[in-house]
Length: 270
Image 1 (cartoon, rainbow, N blue to C red):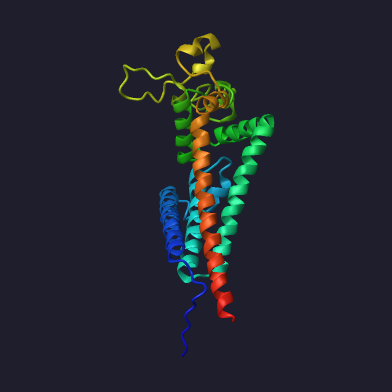
Image 2 (image 1 turned 90 degrees about the horizontal axis):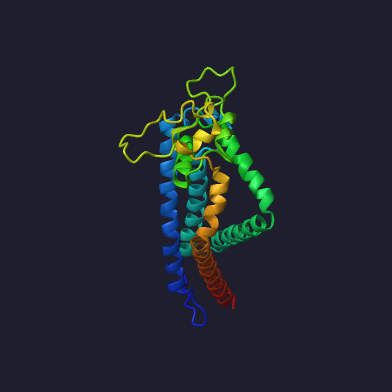
């Protein structure tokens, strides 16, 4: 058996283990996301009946967590193993995937800025679809409630959007006790109440709109989010720049390590 030492080119241990450390964090985060998502699905009984996922007309937040977990797990695994084993195929897969995600983020940001009206319509349609499924999934329900409470808003464009939900619909056919009401997250909180009144929105839309202002939030969540963005533009920009720099750093490490490995193999050929 023959062993070779290369004097002209060698793989940098610095870049190799820095890339490994970079990816082990994302791999562990991916494992955590996957574990949390699968646990949430098992609690809701989705793992025993996957048709519950396709039967939900709105967004299941757990599905989003699982998708993020799968992407992070896959890229972290490819980066870790590719760096340790000096595997060019895995490193190129990692690098290409990160470049694709980075370009996708930039494209989405640019298109969202250029086509604001189209984006607003899609967000409105998305929000209304999730209002329809408000009572169908507990995680979706909690997400909408949190969004409305944090932003002091109700519905996509206003409280009347809750007519899209069969339980809150004002039609005469509805037999729900919540008929012509809104979720409790639309209610203006009373500082004197220490216990949340989950029935505070009952029958509120049967009253005249002039009486709504004292009891519920009347601003739609789309308008609330549009008002929130300019106030927090520096935070949003900072988060976007930080994520972009992390991705560029990972691409740089992977490309540098690939170049080192190719240089060693080229030296081995002579």
